[in-house]
Length: 152
Image 1 (cartoon, one colour):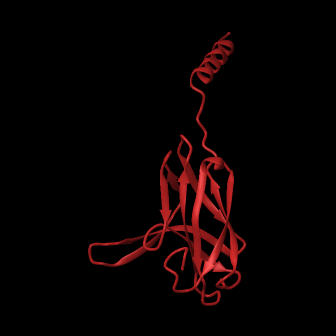
Image 2 (spheres, helix red, strand yellow):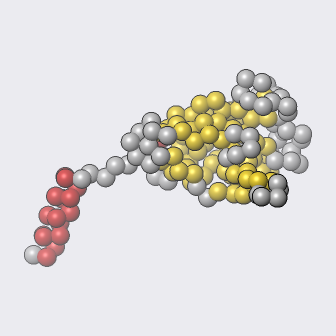
Image 3 (cartoon, one colour):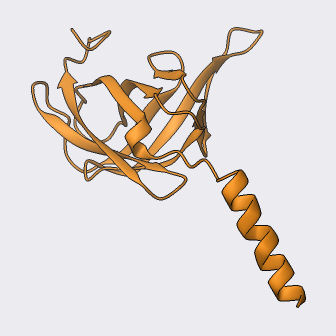
């Protein structure tokens, strides 16, 4: 009888307030670009805008690419003494209806342990892994070493 009551309550709650689950369909990736590398001994970098067009929070929990063994999301900050620091972020949250910019001097994709040089004019595939396990893939064009944006 206790099990029947618990099941009934659970079904009523699901009917009245169904869970809102965001998916990769809600995320639009715009303006992806990267810079050419000097060989493979230094890390590469990639930038883009992540727009959540859905009505629920989306969380990026990882990255995947065959270009680098350790793709990560980093943030750059400057302390009161003017010292720049980079740190790894375990996840990036994108609120419903918001856009998160991965850009020089802020959040960015760090491509550690490159498997091949990043050559101007080429591109690579990058997958963003979401908290629900879904992956969103984008083709990232490689610009010049001096590029300051996707049009350079």
